[in-house]
Length: 238
Image 1: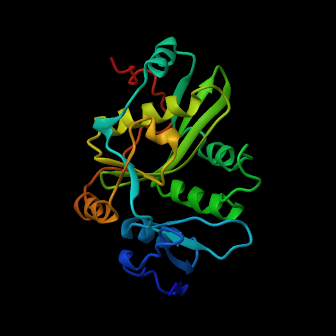
Image 2 (image 1 turned 135 degrees about the vertical axis):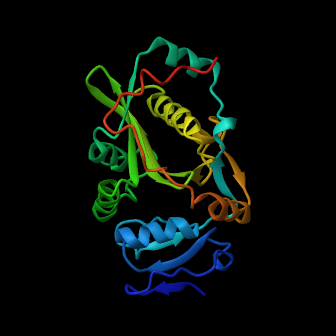
């Protein structure tokens, strides 16, 4: 039976109570306050719903993740990185990245990144928890992604691309950045071929929960290269 959350209670039901069909639906209701969102990610779930639906919380099994040391960069992507056609920055225009991720997609008519969702993550960015990666072609923003850094884990939320491989270039730069800072896992939430091509793979939900227990308490993960370019630090893997 689906659990309905109360606005004055930040507790989520145990992950093993998530539904099998649809896979991972754990709870409904509550709100998108910064406190609840942080509690959700620490618990192992995330919000995902369409405009007009109630607020839904998910914890799929298996969970799609990427271990930084397993990052896969194809020969063609490595070549594009070496061409330096794109410039990558961190946290220079978080709001524009979120808007880009909320834009129309070829495969769907709607977006799950509602105006309320956008504001919620802008609030988390203001707290130094949510971060963005921007990919530029000259002065044009052509791709990017955003997510949350907590402990030694990065919780990816969404990405967009307006030029060939732009989001992949941004993702590789992010993972290189996280690996340098001893992050142990990037949460990709659900399977996509796009992420699988970069080395992401599914793990059991319990293994993901164990990673939360082990690595959320690590310090200093919110120190970021705010407003700086990745170009001086980001070298294409050999």
